[in-house]
Image: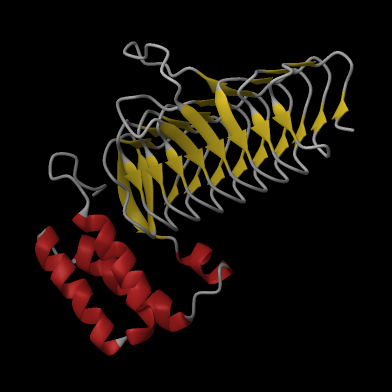
Length: 264
């Protein structure tokens, strides 16, 4: 049988795998689904149309699936979807989506989400990310795989954060952060590329050299954004092994709104 503490309150309509563990005084609503191997700590509230995958570890006092902090929300059946093997620490608050977007707030797999992280409505978080304590995403923010947000990072609504990027402590993101870029400040400005993170993830010296070349094109050569993109596209001819990295950057920049721009 599911290991549910006798003081927990689980709605009979909730769907919990038999291997799920639920701690004392936790409350789980009728539209919640939790897959095998997930543990939910004490004093948590899981509500709304919330689906949680396998082998997640949810610590005490988390609030998952509450309605969005959006005055336009009128009770629509929006969702929160959490993938597999995520660590969700104390006092995290993840809201469901809103009808003004896709209606789903989504967290991928293998993410490390530290205490007091807030994910507002319609945020889309990829895989293998790290959010340090008090990182906060406003609504509609998209975060790519392997991104790292330092403590007290604040992200404006509709901002996109590229894969393998990194913020410094207390950064305020008001523009899109391209892949691989490290930023710092209020508002954040680009400082370098996340070379050490790439090395730790097995990037070859050749691939890292291309990331350095993209950094120079984007930030050091006083090029227009279009000229920088053209220069980066040419890198594939001499470094074909880095084609996925160049394409990642070019695809991200192609989707950047001229009104919002990128971190400079």
